[in-house]
Image 1 (cartoon, helix red, strand yellow):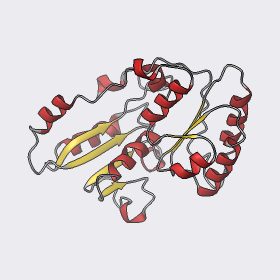
Image 2 (cartoon, helix red, strand yellow):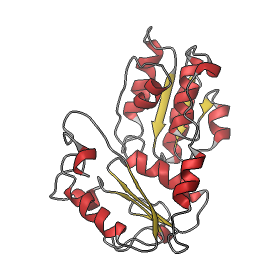
Image 3 (cartoon, helix red, strand yellow):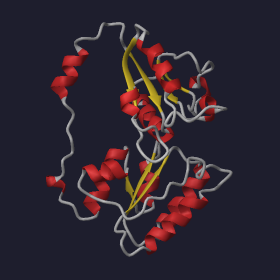
Image 4 (cartoon, one colour):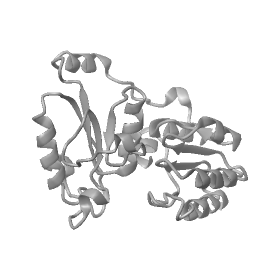
Length: 242
């Protein structure tokens, strides 16, 4: 989110990473609720943006109830969330991280007409698509970031029915064999499934490189989708090693 906001010419005052489990039933959104309160009281913050992979319904209700009492505009990007519930809380709904960032900078005072929204390069897309064979019809996502994996997967699910993952909520589309992709497959390679006894792929990308080679050899694959996360503790050159 901070990268996207920077792309649109904005900036951030605070970034609080709550962790993916914070909005689970067991934890109850403790960190996000504290974060909303702190940011609402922070004089330098003009707009609050909330981001989460799909939260537990009861926790989402609790968070939106607190949002309703905020003195500042709040943009809510809960992957797969319902617009009605967000609007009922008096907040601004975002369907994607790009939309959330755009709404945030506009609410903070940026001129929407002057923002570089980075339109898709359709001529290049058509040129690449023309090179694919008819059997190259599947997308395979290999992600280090869980929320990034979730976002891409939910967007794919709007177009395709057969979207499988190790983090799918629907048990019918949860991968039975992690080492074998099916149809459109999105893998969170930072999940416990892949990191038990091994470094996270942000640090050591060898497991993702091996899976990349496996997917690249599959004649039914048309697109391989990846994220590259920079920062302290991450691999020094994740794009280079890939």
